[in-house]
Length: 286
Image (cartoon, rainbow, N blue to C red; front, side):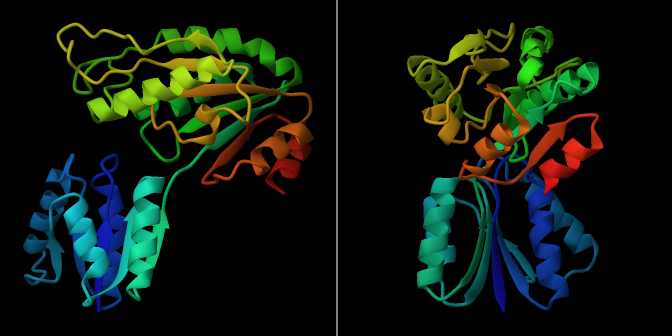
């Protein structure tokens, strides 16, 4: 029948390509509602479909925000919905679409953890943490937003801060930019509010990027690399997905403590361990 895909701003080509090719090869037609922030990539994909002689009407694009989403959830001819995005939107789409008898899959928020063991290769680990936490300004569902340092590995945190300080914040098309702006003023405000809430709840600011200024782009939605230490599971900044260039650092006495911490977090998506010990890595994956 008719399937629908509701896609986010952060991977405007990749995520529609998760959806409509599979719908088509299984004999369905497709409606795609791209993010209103950057719909152009989806339109380019539609042009490519026309060049491939896909008949008009097989894949269709609608634009909009809440009204377009409600249309997809309510229209009786749409039989299935695939969504990638925030918790708030995903819960709404899942509830409303399911009530209307549709099959709905929603891929929503994440809180990805990385465990750092003292036996890890320090140079490699710190480079990977900086890239995973701050790349794409943290606006990806697989961003590593929480690092759990086990035992003596906590001594590496100051070096991580120094690496993060060297990252260049600039417009994404400028040469040498390591991270660009976040998607909107609202996103910047939300990120800053979550950082502020962590500070008020007792987290230590090791690096504060909330007031970063980028020459030539003074009105841009920039947030620089930010690191909060001594974060606790009860803090709002830990319980919610920040979706910005903010790394939370936590400590654990043992690997078992780190595993328990991660397992108690309601979010999944991805996790990693940095170690040179095969037995440790095997235990972690199990």
